[in-house]
Length: 413
Image (cartoon, rainbow, N blue to C red; front, side, top):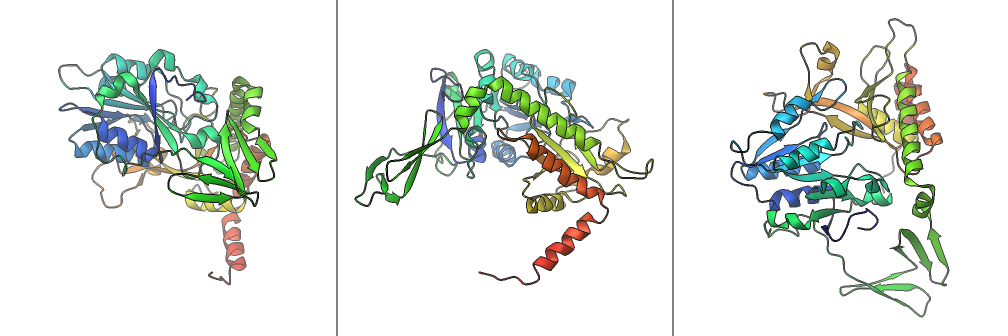
């Protein structure tokens, strides 16, 4: 709690196995009033948010979602304001789920929405999963104090494949929760204290009430440092987070903004040859160059004919070049009558079974690149250089042939 700059006087902490567990825990435990509501602000599909929505629907909760304008993917302010400020006597308020910026497009959102929701009687869940290490210090918690905060330790400490994280609950809001009988199935994690002893062989043993594990090394976190103790008594300190502290949050934040904006600027300048009939290689979704945007960018790659390259193929080819990219699905997109037809054609049906409505099943599959604490210019340039190879009209075919040639004989172990 000290590392995330959250006061023990104001909040209590629940460790959770993953972000889905945190959202489901709140949905199951929150005491929605009759005709209560859930209002979410997400421009992309999220397993955690979808789980919360389904859980609330099972309880008869009315679910609403913010809409986002094309092509900037900024919040449709008037529509969201109307949903937040609906008359007190008309509906019972419920839960407002709000991220500080999109974890896919990097679109920033104003604190004002959180303040407005609190003013009109909503309980607020602040989604802080997209924040990187040390960025939790920038939260305006002393001013707004949301009822719930979901934090990912993957983002805070940089390495955590399990997604292990925590849910902060404001102590004054505990009365809004009811006791749930299925806490274990929802992914609440219990941490058991362990004591260590050194065996005669010089290896270290970690003993708990349920098991004894013999290790040649043991890793622990102390005061923001990762220490690795060897059996011989030699102690190695991994000072990555200490280095971040010494450099300072302002410098780290500015550096990240410079890198993401350089990448966006470089990508939108890539064009297929033979203008004016040539097409842009990369299409960015969400904000372009902006000092307020998050350190993540959503985009798609298009060939010289203007056809989108399958994001899954882009991700696989990037992986073979030791570049980590992800895929996401943009949704809740609203087109005005004057929106370009190109955006309308870009929509895909995520749910092939249900074709009835555009509200949930339609969106755009995109590639995403996220910058971390230790991302440097070389990393960003390598990504740009890799994507520029798609200017070669035969690049995908060549890579497919090379992959098939290398893997002509597969040995199963």
